[in-house]
Length: 210
Image 1 (cartoon, one colour):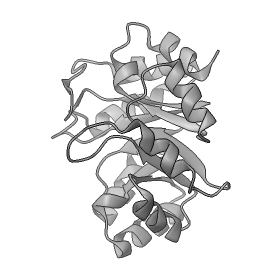
Image 2 (cartoon, rainbow, N blue to C red):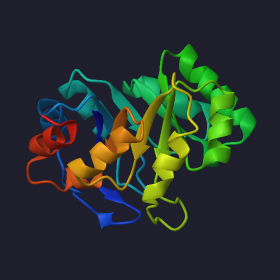
Image 3 (cartoon, rainbow, N blue to C red):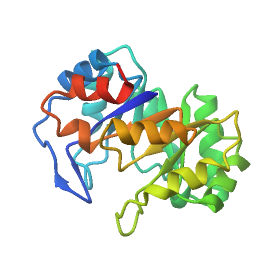
Image 4 (cartoon, one colour):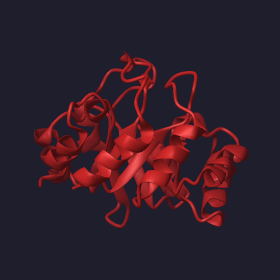
């Protein structure tokens, strides 16, 4: 199981996590623990992030980096490339069909991977409509912030075999990781549990199954 380890200072659901974190240092510990990729929040208003956090993390590691932000304009996609990101987040719920197609095509043109995030089967159909190669299923409701642990298994069953499946949110231990692997996921995007850990490298290693 691959782990996408997240760097974020706070979240809308939990408030402040580690506002004084060192992006470069945390990125290095994640890589040491076996993370396959980083996810770095660059949104300032909701998550306390910044492009500087991404640049610092990118410079500290060799693994790929996802810019995790609300992509709502073509300039957000180009900015991700300028910051040094390898991947951009496209949230289906935040985009109309034309935007989803345009931003996905632009990402490919800029040699960026696109993590296309869905919450249900209807959004999955839209993601498949743009031939998304990487689909993330977010178990957290964007409105209520509640986690639905049955959602990942339900939606995974409808994702074609050739698509890389990423489970997002509500993952707190190795038991969760094993359950999601059995449901057909290839990777986990984990934030709060890792950010709050006293030993981030060991926490990643546990999830990976070392």
